Structures are given as C-alpha cells and as structure tokens.
Image (cartoon, rainbow, N blue to C red; front, side, top):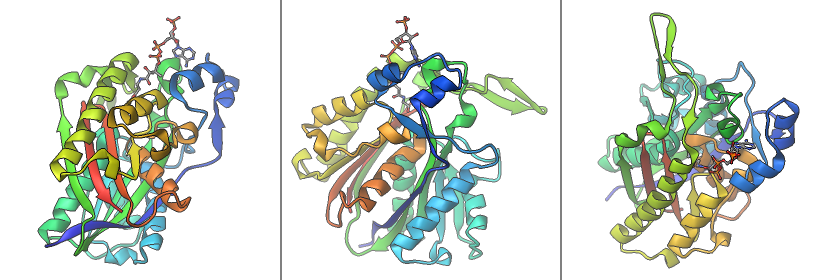
Length: 321
Ligand code: UT7
C-alpha cells in the first residue's frame, strides 16, 4: 500500500511586520483596539510591489526541500494553492518549477479554492501519490492578498496579509495523510468574492475583495466544526487522539468556536493569526511550519488541518506527522 507523508515544511513572510498602528498611521480609519477585539490580529506582512506569489512560494518551497533533505529535481509534482497568481497564465506552479530550476518534466498546476486552497491541494497531491503516478510533491499555499484589497474599505483591508507555506509530500509505506474531506457550495459565492475579471485589456467588474463578514463568520463556524468531525469519524478516530488543530487563520473567535465544538482546549490549537493576519491559502502551511520549527509539532503527532473560504469551499485533512 502506498501512502503520502509530509517529509518537510517551510514558509516565508515578506518584509517587516506591519502593525495595526502602522495601518492607522497610513491613514486607515481604524484602531488597534477594534482590530484586536474583532479579529485577534496584531500585525501582518505585506509584500513589496515587485514581489509575486511565485517569489514567496519559491522561498517557502526551498525551506521545505531543505527540511525534507531532498533536491528540487526530486520533485515530480508541484501544486500551488493561490487566489493571487502572478499571471492569468501560466500557473504559479509552473513559475515556481522554473524558479527552482526543475527540468524533469514533472507536473505543475494551481488549485483555486481560496482559503481552503491548501487543504484542497494537499488532498489532490495525496491522491496522485497514492495512485503511484507521482512520488514526491511540493504542495504550496502562496498569496499576495494585499493586491486585491480595497484600502479604502476598512472592514476588509485590516484583516489580510501576504506569505507562503509549503510542504514536501512523499510516498511512504506508512500513513501520512489519513483522511481528507473537501466540500463546496457555490450558491454562497456573493458573501466572499472578488467579482471582477479581465477582458479586452480592461478590468471588467470589481477587482477588490468584498466580504459580508458576519455571514462568512457564521458559515465558517458551522462548516469547520462539521468537517473536522467528518474526517475523524471517517477515519474511526476521536478528537481526543488529536495533538494539534491547525485551522485557517481568519478570526480568533472562529478558531475558538471551532476548538470548542471539537472539545479541544486552545493549547492544542496552533494560532499564528495574531502576527500573520489572514493569508488565505498560505495560512495553514504557514502555521504548520511555524509550529514544526518551534518544536510544538513533533514526528508522530496527529494533526487536523482545516480551512474555509470563498466559493464557498471548505475541507479538512487528518494527518499523522
Ligand atoms: O478567510 C476568509 C474567511 N473570512 C472570515 O472568516 C472573516 C469572518 N468575519 C469576521 O471575521 C468578522 O465578521 C469581522 C472581523 C470581519 C467583523 O467583525 P464584526 O464583529 O462582525 O463587526 P461588524 O462587521 O459587525 O462591524 C461592526 C462595526 C461597524 O460599525 P457600526 O455600524 O456598528 O457603527 C463597522 O463600521 O465596526 C465598524 N468597523 C470598523 N471599525 C473600526 C468595520 N471595520 C472597522 C475597522 N475599524 N477596521
């Protein structure tokens, strides 16, 4: 039986932290108190104008390759989860392959599932590996959400940040990714979207992120609890067997409510939201890598990774690290 295991993690955050007070100093009509009390965010990182998602992804990938002890050319599959690609095409994954100097003809493509993107990408990569078609994948979440923020909309612009996280996922004789579940309900697309596109050399529609925060909040709390229970039940495991919950980092109150529904104390929950903000598809692998490097997550630990985002999409993975 072939399984897929995480062999190494890496991440990258651009520039210095930008605090809530820095945003106020830049003229945004907000306050540190409001942002902290409503979301739990204290600071985020914002990429320079000439830095794209593929640049962040490449740097995170190099760190994951180092941690896994393998060479770029050992990778035969690259999946990048992103909603802020460098270009309409080629895919960010193809650009990352080129930037890493990989010339082995392996597969490379992007997954677009917004904040659930990393869980989607991990689940897809796992299926490629378990099928035997590929042996070692780079699964990356990379975002420059600052590019799609309307900086005059204080209800959204203070919540997001830029960054990238990556894992090397490889074939193994022992599991790894124990179970995953992916869901979508496109009927909810208006509550979180960037309702614009490009045609005839022009932006058609609205190129900025629009969110009904309260509707998203309620939806997120419900589906994150449900999908975590679903992967545990389908794997025949209980929440008590979980060492770490690594949820999408959007709002500390959503994270606390999800942990409560699972019966997990907050000291079993990885939270990086306070200093990363919401980095969409990058948030889960960024949190994973930080917790691995700090020694919180150790080999043998059981993890639940779970995300929810625009679409609406949501999903979870039960992982033995
Ligand atoms: O990754 C995708 C998933 N996204 C999420 O999970 C986000 C989910 N939603 C949330 O996290 C929360 O709904 C928010 C943090 C977005 C908002 O928190 P809230 O408690 O739902 O606040 P609200 O939208 O009800 O806004 C309350 C007040 C309003 O003022 P009035 O009308 O009550 O006077 C807003 O105008 O807060 C005001 N407000 C702000 N004030 C200062 C909105 N944004 C700001 C701001 N600074 N940045």
